[in-house]
Length: 180
Image (cartoon, rainbow, N blue to C red; front, side, top):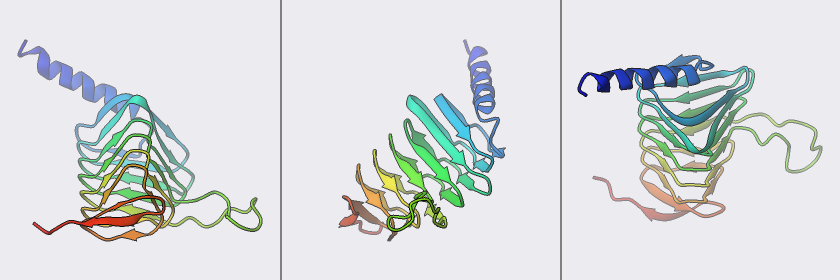
């Protein structure tokens, strides 16, 4: 049995790399469970030990031409989540995205005026050690600073300071975490 365990890990890593073949770069020991859809002509870059758990529902990573999605080391994304980049989406190290999260750097049409015009994309940044609750929506221009926590169902379109727990639609501060 001791000899089959490393073989299984090797096969798991090989299978994960096959599922991630459309990525521009993949770090060490990725874990892919279930289905992951990688679309578009842009770049998807994964750091070391990234976990994509698409067992509940497929995870979608869609980087359009000129767009870039970067998942740094030890990022975990749960099933049903979708990341759509026309410009740039960065998810910092040790961050977690819950199930059914929607992360996008463009709203694809203006809220007022000519709905056929495409507005400019605004980069979206999630710094390290951030937790995003299930069914949260991160809109263009969102910047979640280090250690921020989002309650499930939160809608964010602005900068959230570090060490703060937010929730609601639109997001509002629920609690400020004490340092240390």
